[in-house]
Image 1 (tube, rainbow over the protein chains, first blue to last red):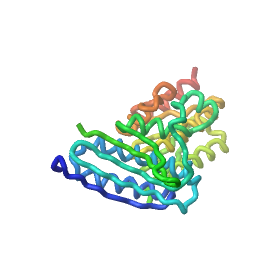
Image 2: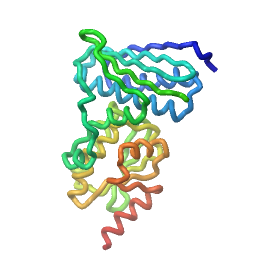
Image 3: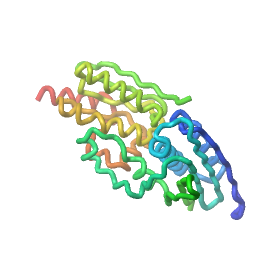
Length: 144
Length: 119
């Protein structure tokens, strides 16, 4: 049990390659299982972070393996806060419309689902530009 | 590092894809390759068995969306079977049950193809 006011902050920095998604998921699992979080919430957080990082690799870094992704995880007994920071191309996923499965299927397209999924899985998803070349995705999951 | 495996076997006129491990943006291209091989061989009736799949992200779901119309345009389909609840929940969140058929058991999915062939 974590006292109310105690905040635990952990950080992971990885290169922007898809083979690091497994490392990212492991980091989230290891650092959420110590909090009083149920398995269902942990699974949702892991998937949301995977989706956010996949979007960064794909859209912000355009699959360039040289980019850096920093993940900061902060938790107390009320919520888990994850900040994912990149230095890639700024993109505004708020402009991505809700996916129309039927239309995407007809067009033989499989993309555009990640952002929608993140919003379904987390209580808060916020994109921002925190300095001239750094973008941040803020993900929040309330535990109560 | 990623733990994923995809294999295909034939059951009569149907091809069954067995998925194992973690299907994400890193491993999804392996599944795409498997679908490309099926299309090259004019195999359009596909059952995907999820029994040993532990994790799926939207990159994995996107593969099915990208290929299902090709299968349907050629009198086939992609049907899903043996899915664990937590994996099904992701499909459900995105509204897949309206557009795809899910079966508890692989045999039922194969039988559905066979029934259609008889009728």
